[in-house]
Length: 598
Image (cartoon, rainbow, N blue to C red; front, side, top):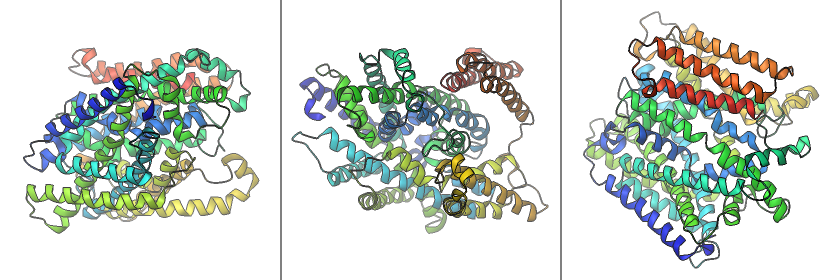
């Protein structure tokens, strides 16, 4: 890929990378205490929160993986972006007000306030394991991408060299930067990635084989029904993205990522105010909705372009993004250089964003809690830096051991499957904790640790017993899809937590009552929304309404509900300055997409 760059592309690429490094270094040049180093002094405004959330979420493996699945499976992958919106709104209006009451550094500290010290430790162990798995995956796809970028040039690097380069840069940024540097890098990356996604998307959709999004829909609908790719819903027994799993397990995964995941929620904990945290999160939601159209739909378009120009099966899913860039983006204008700069920055930025969070967890939940309770700010920061070096070393070894650089599997789905044993129990513990005052601390710890066990038992029971029943196999597939596993784990952990809590009822005052949600009217609004949307869904399923027709009234319902909530506020202020207006607009766009592309 790099061999196709012209002089202007090289200049733009190098200048962009140097600007990122210089800006991040400048932002992180002064570190006064642990709050400055780990939380950017809790001073982030909404635009910084939005840019950092998007930059952390939409990284290289996300862009490459999303387009690759659009290429190999289809538009149904959009659920990973579109259905994030409900979880984003849950974060905004349920969790942000509760999380920010205690000015915690980590979500494990929140669990200690809500439950006990053992709950804090259990979360730390599980989430550190999750982040390490993510880091290993980031090293793999990052090294593979760097190898493709520099392939055929005098700078060509091997898989091992790429991993070592990523590890080295990560250590440097983490040791000498801190969260200020991470946020600046994320915001620069957000601008570059939006440009990259838009350029590649527009260039792809305007190819003569495609002729725009309408042309893509017409081309796709002309294919046999079982070969069409521009639909959101796949059969319930689909091995990768079954529709029933989408609305059960995937929604739980979104709740994990947006409400209980340290390295994403740390951005809202570092916001200057609740309003900055909420507006920033909503703005990131709007940015995420660009991905289905300019990345996933581009992957579907790439499928038709590559089949026409190079033959079916000529490109691996994880290589589709770079092949598409080489195919549709014109050279000689600096565009390729800028898009490659965004992709290269994303490789590093996402990894040291995760590294910043894992060092925060280790510093506050292990070092200050158990190893040195009287540690100074300087000692805490120093421990965080040393732990970054150790984590990078471990991740390097495990990357070489666990991933095959020649693999043609869908990396993004592989990663989701690998981490699905850890996430659901955390969702159960957090949600029950803020919704049910009687949740028992000891029950929360047991439920949290039981998640992986429930997952393994679900695999064994389904794959070796239930799958032998023809009716079950025909409905859910020959093997248990990880999205169904997620739903089973979360359900079992929730029931276990509630059951043990009732059995061990203490009878005393509720622990941390300010951390339990008190919103009596919320359930009513949710039932109104579900009831009205349910009527439209029935109309679509019975054939009375076309999905494209139902999309418009479906989109008006959430906006009307949010405007009603705005009107009930005692001092609403300007509508266009209200977070409720933008939350309603975000919800409306989401519902429209879910209906229109049915």
